[in-house]
Length: 43
Image 1: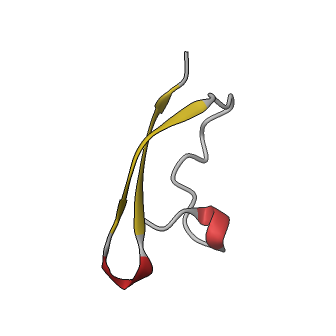
Image 2: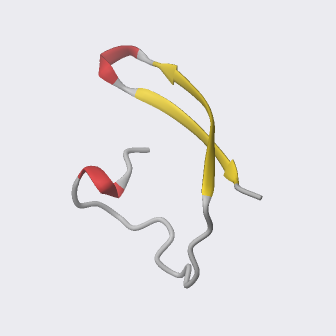
C-alpha cells in the first residue's frame, strides 16, 4: 500500500468522518526504497 499522501490514488478510508490520533510502533526498511510503518491508535 502506498499512502495517498504521496500523490493521487484510491482513498482507502473515504467513509471515515472522525480522525483518530495514531502512534508509530515500528518501522522496517524494505527493498527498493520502501519503508513499512506500523501504527496503533493512541491512548
